[in-house]
Length: 81
Image 1: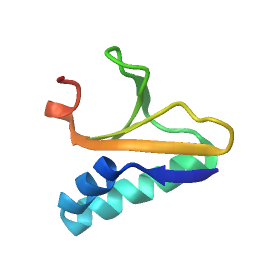
Image 2: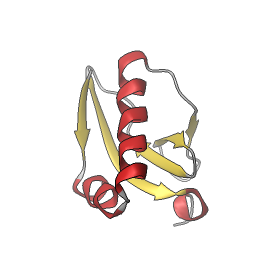
Image 3: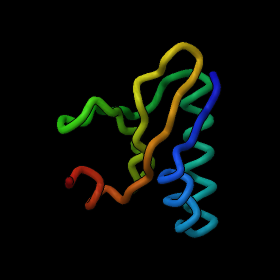
Image 4: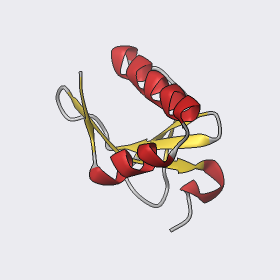
């Protein structure tokens, strides 16, 4: 699988401290390898969210061999419009 990060997702990751950023990226790479993880479909869109502790990593449903991650948000703000 190939990973793509949107501009928003890259900006979100850049704002995290190094420890949290490393944790999120490690979990995303593990998810991409085997497509298993704590995932939930977001009701207000067609996106999916991967749970990484207090963070949610949003992504579009995989198309072919590409997974596009669109945002990284703290769980208390993740599901608000």
